[in-house]
Image (cartoon, one colour):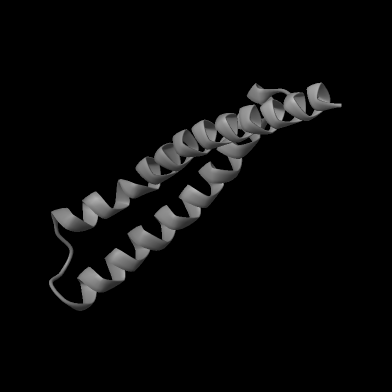
Length: 83
């Protein structure tokens, strides 16, 4: 598997996780706001998490996936040279 393929797979997985977290955060915030202070600008800000969290999670997943893939390839290369 190439570094780009591993990074892309990790980014996709993390984007889905970010979407799940964004949905929980936004609808949890809506329920909390309706129960306490009422719907306000903070509620709208919480719904922006539906776009922001998947993007941030995907970016972090891409970077971590690429670094992990490079690390694994480096270790495998070092082991081959040691033989």
